[in-house]
Amino acid sequence: MRVFITAATIEEWMPAFLEIDTLYTSESNRLKVMFHQGGVGMLANAVALTKLVYEEKPDLILQVGIAGCFDKNTALGNVVVIKEEVLGNTGVEEDGKWKDIFDLKLEKPGYPPFEKKRLPNHHLEKYNLLKLDEVSAITVNEVSTKEERIQQLVKKYNPVIESMEGAALHYVCREMNVPFMQMRSVSNYIGERDKTKWEIKLAIDNLNKGILNYVDKLYKIG
Image (cartoon, rainbow, N blue to C red; front, side, top):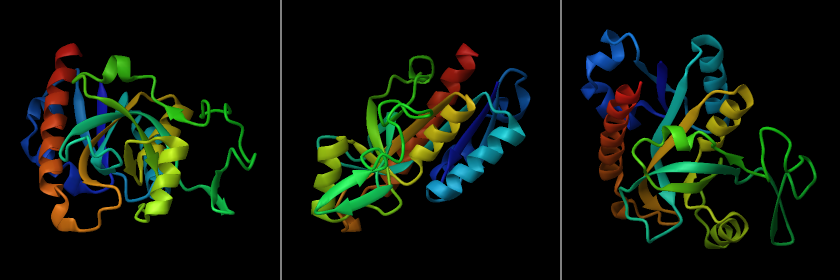
C-alpha cells in the first residue's frame, strides 16, 4: 500500500517525518509511507495533487495541516478529520449577500465531483482509523477575518474548520477515484488575529502525534 502524507508546508508534517519508524518508509513490503508538499492555496495544491496521482499512483492520500476553527467549543490543539468540503469564496457578493457558483447557476449542485453542492469524503468509514471527530470544512483563498464575512459563511455553510487547501484534496481525489483523508489540528479561532492567542506549536505537536498513531494503525490493518 502506497500512502502519501501531504501538507501545504513541510513544517506541518516534519516532526512525524523525523520520528516515523523506517519500517513504514523503507523496510515494509506491504506499507510504503512517503511525504509530500502540496503548496499553499487551492491552485498550487490542486496541481501538486494531480501530478502526485498521475506520477505516483497512491493507494491513499492523507492531507494534514493546522487550521482555523469557527466553533469555540472545540479546544485549540484538537485534531479532527474532515467529512465534507465547501468552496468558501468562489462566487460573488451582491447586495450584502454571498452567492456561490451554485447560486449563480454556473455549476449544478450534483455534478461530479460535487454532491448537493459539497465535496464529501465517503472513505472515512474505512480510513478514519483513530475515530476522530468528523466535521465539515470550508476552503478559502483569503482567510476570513471580518465578522460580517464570518457570519455569512457560518449561516450559509455551517463549517467547523477553515483551510486554504482542503477542497483541492477532495476535488482532485473524488474526480480521480483515489481514496483520501484530511486530518486537521486547530491552531486558532476564526477572526482572532492576535497570534499570542493562537496555539500553533500545540496544534502541530498534536497533529504529528496523530500522524504517527495513524500510520501505526494503518500498518496493523494492512
